Image: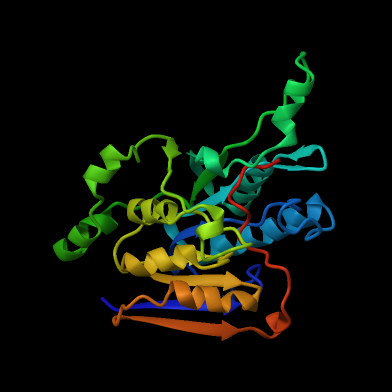
Length: 291
């Protein structure tokens, strides 16, 4: 089955290129709010960050098909000594947009991805109560649903399509996909990745989510595309995809990720007027512990 993959260099707050109710699965990771290790002054304040997320949530509701899934990969953020409840606020904004809260999975990162942090070291310097600030080695995968899924859809699919969409039970059981905690350790060290200096979650995360929440030939969206990890995996798994990114300097990396030989797939790049000047990327965040 031929697949099409469209990259739009433009603001994802209005995904006007995508028809209503045409997306079966969204997997995305919004920017860390003013992360000191990423773009510390990307937002003027936390409300500006939440306004961006709110706008995206509303357009996600428009483009999502009935009963289908949106996954946010994110976590709370510590900035200048203050912890911001990103997980709670994204959940609230998605509910306000009309989605149902379905589940939360915790991705436990490899310990090698935890930076040396002054937070946990405070107790070493002051081994007394009230000096405890833990290092974060997790990321939350927040799962939302647009209404309820009509399972007659599955019964109407062809046997061939069902077989192509079958969830690998060996992986499901062996790698414990069935648990709400995922220990994913097959992650490239930061220095060995193609995306040096930008954040990209491991391919294993979209691989699992795409297999668990979409059928072969359906369409996957990532409104904060970054280096294109979600799109790469969607292409490899026989899904169509859309991606939005405001930093056109990432085009080379995205193209490299999608350069594998797949003659039955087509990749398109579109440039909106507002994104012609390079801007700091409102996309992937560093896949390391908050500090």
